[in-house]
Length: 112
Image (cartoon, rainbow, N blue to C red; front, side):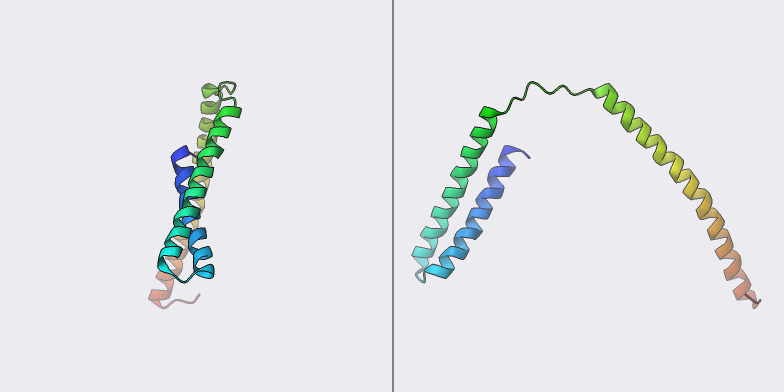
């Protein structure tokens, strides 16, 4: 998840949590607005702090992505999907031919 999305998610979550808390505790609109803004600000700042600690303590340079091996696996999966699709196509043609014959017999008044 990107940092911007994380911050946006927690800001919106803070808004709704603040809205719920404010509606249950206060009746004055300005107090509700203040509680919502304070809660949203708290969630916003906590999201930034969480991202700062995550970036500080994670080691991003140690993971090596092996593109060639990944591409070989994806090509294998793609070939398997093509093979299964061809098998299903044969079965579909067989069943649709039988269904078409059944409909033709029914239209001609033949017995089933």
